Amino acid sequence: MNIVELSLPTINKFSSAYLSEEESIHRFFTYNPFSENTYEIRKNALTHRSFRRDELSDHLLGFNEKYQAGEQTLHNIEKLRRDDALVVVAGQQAGLLTGPLYTISKIISIIKLAEEQESKLGVPVLPVFWIAGEDHDYQEINHINVPQNNNIEKIALHMKSAGKKMISELDFHKGDIQEWVNKILHTYGETPYTKDIKALLNQSVESSSSLVDFFAHLITNLFKGTGLILVNASDPGLRKLETPYFHTLLSKNREITAEVTKSQNKLVDLGHTPMLEVQPDSMNIFYHLHEERELLYWNEASQTAITKNSSVEFSLEELYENIEKHPERFSNNVVTRPIMEEFLFPTLAFIGGPGEISYWAELENAFKVVNLEMPPVVPRLSFTIVERHIDSTIRELGENLEGILKEGLEDKRKAWLAEQELDETVSQMEQHMKEYLEVHHKFKDTSKVLMPHLQSNFEKNWNLIDRQFLYIKRLLERSAYEKHENIMKKYHRVELALVPNGIPQERVWNIYYYLNEYGLDLVNRLCEIPMKHNGKHKVVFI
Image (cartoon, rainbow, N blue to C red; front, side):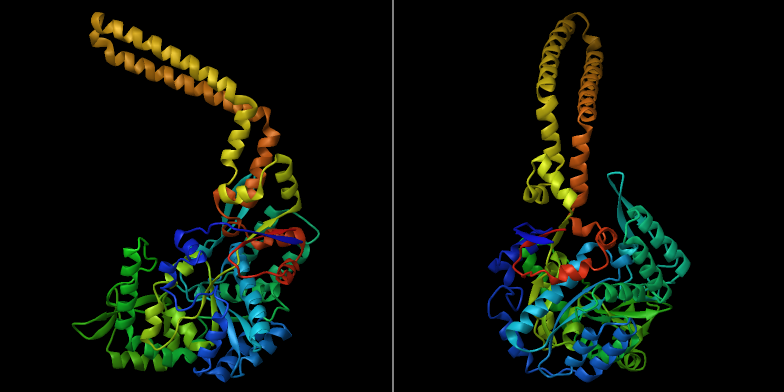
């Protein structure tokens, strides 16, 4: 296994500008993560803050022990009690079978940055992964993409009762999930590792009572020995710890919303589209009722907090009382979640993907409203895994890997086919078509005098002829494709592996395809590769 770094653009313009350290972008953030002394400055800033370290560590111990976390993880949680201990945080929804590959690369990013900065700063720096179990967009996480017949096949696990329920509260039918897991593995095919993977997955299903449990079991197993600490945002125990911070967020809700809106307006002036949808009266906190969550809004006229359909209404006193008695009924939205993480953890850095970087730009002043400082926002590592047979095929085709990752292969495939077969033939056909058009125009011009009432018929006639020429052209292309079908399939195979449908690999494929081919220790082997957070794309050859 070896690694090559490439400079590739990200999936959006904003995050690419962030990587390029454009001043107009970086002024929306407190720290520049690419500056040499950023982490030292951030460490010193955190020495003036106090955290509920013992209570948080007790909670994390109980949560991680539930999933048989390794000794290194439990040791790291104990380290968190130290006044100088720091964390590197990232988060993600609890995707089925861990979701797309970028979930894995995000966790590896946490681990590598924590290792790097612990060595440099001389204090414990612990990797923490925040499971967004309170999210309710089940359609976003309910499927896995698998390669089938040179195409992407989406295999979903359907749940009729999803609605607005939190992912952590969805019904968990073990039989249905095991059947779905076995279906996924069947598409991957039998290898020397399939039996062990199937046993581990089925055991994880049996040990789980929710999708968050299932996710946590899998992540714990994949990253055992790395010291990774898991936290679940929807855990009632964590909500209890968050109670005083909910008070703060609600008491400052109007100022928070106003500052987010101001930042959005400044970004619009620079030509950027805001990522967050924030209503002027939004309190940026969800209230949970009947297993569904509703965003709270402030009604200035009645001085009450209400849900959109007004099914719930609280005075501020009632709201605070409810938080004290039932903190599990409240959760953060996309605006307040980063702030809540900052309240809870001594965060040396937050690691985010391109979309997260874009919306964090709208939040700096929201942190300031509650007297907090936005941590350094570090772009996650991005990966492409290149299997040996795919690497050999690329070389055989004479194509360039960097070009493939930047531009895909569709145009290159068509260009190769045209050069081999079609250029001369199509050129001749187009010349004949041009000559035929000239004759048709002469015939049409002559008929204007003799048969003017038939001009529309001449137009229809030419349209029929034009369609026939296009039909013949398609026949030629199909014939050429079939003649070189073996080469065409190789182009498709490489594209499907690396940039399926022109989309980065890490946004489409799932880690279990690669585990089935290369073994359950693959993730640990990836974690052992030296990697730097330098904004460059990592190509891993396995």
